[in-house]
Image (cartoon, rainbow, N blue to C red):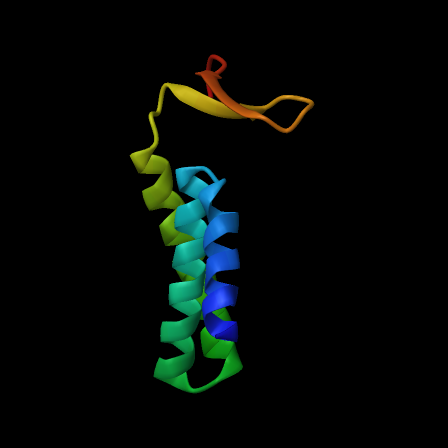
Length: 87
């Protein structure tokens, strides 16, 4: 039961993120699990998390609309608008 509640809390926290942030989080978690299982060491898990996080962020960024950026106003609300020139 505790595992289910923990997964629900993590899922709810990730739901408010941009696709880039979601991809990085999921990639890092997956990479850490795979690296830890494959090597059986903490170092392998850390390396897997780093590689998975970067790969997930790149894939998440590709899935976003490249013409728009995400912003937050002073009340914490998220909105999208055209990215500044050269971004």
